[in-house]
Image (cartoon, rainbow, N blue to C red; front, top):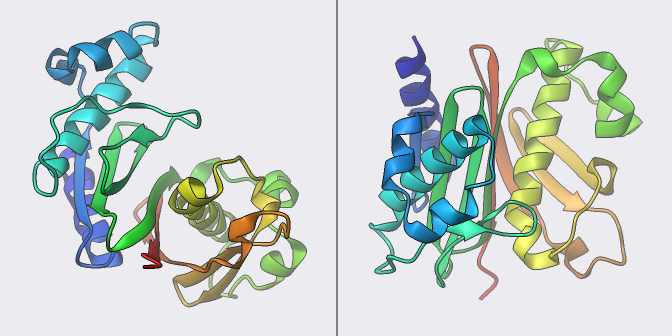
Length: 224
């Protein structure tokens, strides 16, 4: 049931992330478009109907969480990398897959960044390996995981990690610019492009297989 996957994914992310991170999960619904703030409606006016429904569901989901940690009632607009532009003092992230929309927010005094990702595992085919992970990461695949499951686990871990660190680096990086090390389902990610100032920042995270989906969550504690 679709309703169950939204609730299950929300519960899974709550268990995966530190307790100070708030999480919301819901199904994509065009009806949320009617609750967009005027600036959000204008920003999404040129979107396709499917993309606008994604955007609206994500914004309503984020606002549902923001009311618990921020007094701001300003619109949540779109950054250069399609990241949500959140109020000062807040870190947050959003991810979509099929009809599933997940969001997470946390106070900036506790986290320099958070990131989440959800993907359908079936989209990860062997021909994608060289563009997503290094040979060392490929060789680290546990014997009890299929190549498809491992690729989806690594992809979601890197995608969530990029979202977590983006505010610190402010630029796009390739999947091969990031290295993962796993201990079970938990991982540590780091940028291996030395010219990036935040290359020494360690990103913590964890992954979870949920039916046909792979979930990942990543976070960077506040540096003080």
